[in-house]
Image (cartoon, rainbow, N blue to C red; front, side, top):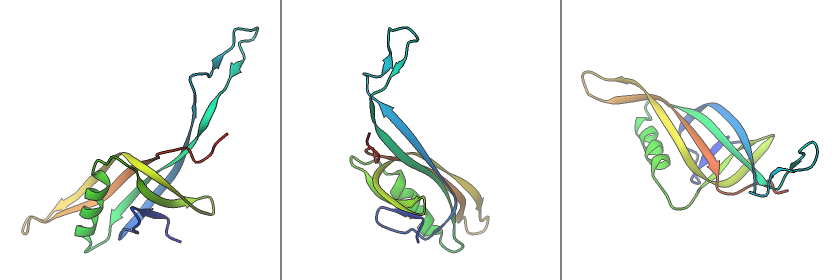
Length: 132
């Protein structure tokens, strides 16, 4: 099972960390009542299951690593298809990349070639996967 597929492609990188998160969003109708005890009244919109993962460059695959960075850092008007591990299977959704970063390993003094070490990416679903 491939644990991360982005943009319909399993990129030739090494996934070193993967975390799953969720956000439950509520409508503006959510709030405290004015009755005794001020009980909370909830109006959930849904649960958004997102992910953060870190990848490392495979030796000799510097161009693939750069292409992956270029692909995920490009601004878009629509989501990127994502298939990623969830529980004991995968979850598929359209996502946007909220942010990411990569760390430099070294620059070869002789050739000037740049070697990146790792990259971390946060992906957020475009719509709720779990509805009330």
